[in-house]
Length: 231
Image 1 (cartoon, rainbow, N blue to C red):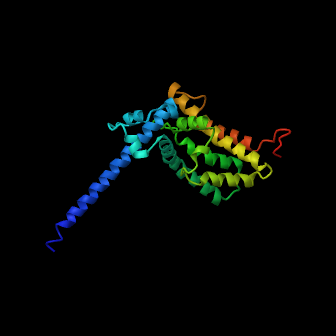
Image 2: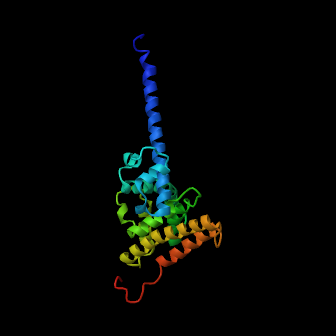
Image 3: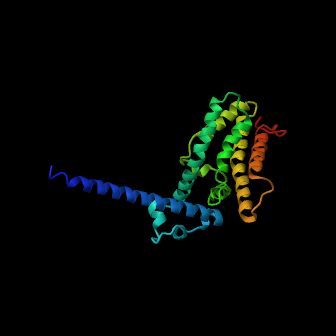
């Protein structure tokens, strides 16, 4: 007993030190991600040196970003996963409500379940919408994010949409849904920018978000253009 008792506090101390190191590592990663998000949003994703991100995150080691993430693409994906998880938590609740709701779901419900969880990022210290808007513009969509873990709720919403509007050809509905996914981001990013730079919007934010949902919903079910070969 006398031989083993002194070892127990030593093990607890080591475990606590390891936990503290892990916590510091996570705090550093978060500082790097938020700094990268802001700089990417302000200057463009390809225009910001990784060293500048480290400096903005308060890191004295010039290789801190590479140490924690590897390269620029991994930083981008990590931002998507970090912010996407915040939206996914809210979106999963919307999807669950649609699944168990007493009344039949509508196209507006589906679009609302996509847009409103994005709107949670309309916060003063959050630059995700501007960053995501730039990413979509630079990359031409979301194709470069294959493998990024942001949850399955968006896939569920797209499947539900197909059941709600079976008369729209799949290829057409796929393209229209992509327009919803990208258009919502661009519009919300513009609202956020106007709010930051001018301190005012043409209407209350709740009103603008609601109108955006109605507008995007109408586009999903609009008649096909005359002569569209995808019919």
